[in-house]
Length: 245
Ligand SMILES: NC(=O)c1ccc[n+]([C@@H]2O[C@H](COP(=O)([O-])OP(=O)(O)OC[C@H]3O[C@@H](n4cnc5c(N)ncnc54)[C@H](OP(=O)(O)O)[C@@H]3O)[C@@H](O)[C@H]2O)c1
Image (cartoon, rainbow, N blue to C red; front, side):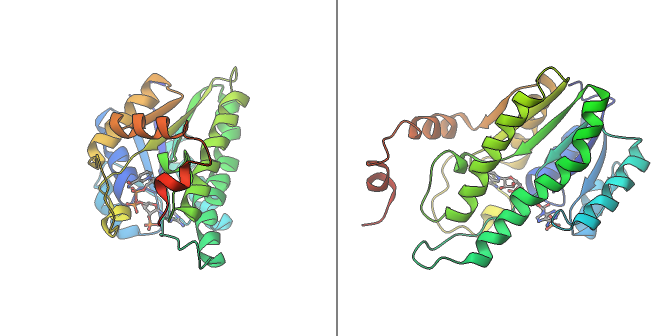
């Protein structure tokens, strides 16, 4: 999809990857609307270069009103980037159903709410792009990522299926799977985060993927190699490599 001159809705853009993607899209000549819950942070990201549309993806009424506002402001959209996300470390021996539900609400049901609003317009136009920021954490079950990883694996599956469904309808689906990126989400982590990249580098890779219509954008290359190789490790061996004890 040609980014220059396009209209893009970036959801989850008040910080981190979404904020960096929104800025990079503007730099490349797109008209951009940014959404998240924190209005002040959105305004800081937007300056006078983007349309600010505060909304909560988990609240159907809120995100629907936001969508109407985006349509009114931009006259429709050519691309949506879903970068809203939630992560909290799990303790597998003390399952927390409320925490699991929170991950599902933001990472999956929020995405579902946005897809329901945007997909018909893109399909009707016969063009456009849907980019979803998933994670390499969805590639394998990682201890401590029981809640998060399950939703990220679902995003990988969902976007893979949607890409096939929309093939021939002119709408591209880009699955984005970052390794570690220095954002609010990772700043509290107390475990090693190898090959950490900056949000600006992540944004460049994501925008390149949208421009080229890539099926998947995975970065950095070291994490790509490690996690793609990890997919080949047999189930019986995996807990011995990744688990405690
Ligand atoms: N950082 C990493 O290492 C990494 C690696 C792989 C994948 N990812 C994925 O990248 C995406 C972006 O994460 P990030 O690292 O940039 O973290 P971040 O800085 O914490 O950004 C998360 C964004 O999601 C928004 N959000 C959360 N709940 C929301 C809700 N209910 N409604 C609307 N917006 C909501 C937040 O805004 P408000 O709080 O203002 O609502 C914020 O803009 C996530 O999907 C994450 O899983 C991150």
